[in-house]
Amino acid sequence: MVQFSTARLNASFAALSDATRRGVLEQLGSADASITELAEKFHMTLTGMKKHVGLLEQAGLVTTKKVGRVRTCRLSLGGLDEEAAWIEARRQIWNARFDALDEVVEALKRKEKIDGQQSE
Image 1 (cartoon, rainbow, N blue to C red):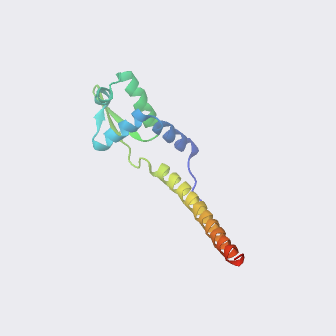
Image 2 (image 1 turned 90 degrees about the horizontal axis):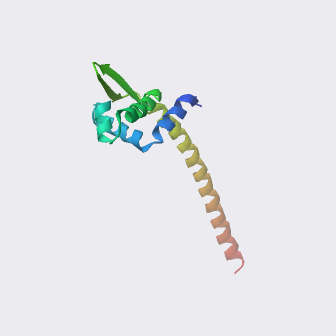
Image 3 (image 1 turned 60 degrees about the vertical axis):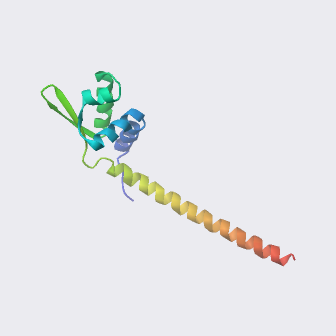
């Protein structure tokens, strides 16, 4: 089984839990942006946006580069690969459980049908 970094997953999911941070990721998916541009887009103070970007950066979802007085944000390479793999592993587990449940339901339906025919 693949080993996942608990600290990384916790940081990523915590970062993704906020609608503004998800919006920032969507915005950066279109084009790189400065913190000032992001703050304006989301109607926030620079300090507030810096905190959001900082959390995204700690989670490894965003990188920033400072040139002069402007800090530009961009999506990180690899982005959500580990998180997507973790979700996929859980999806496979749930699918297997639902498939097993489907088999039980079908077996019960067959038994019910046979029992109904025998009592006639």
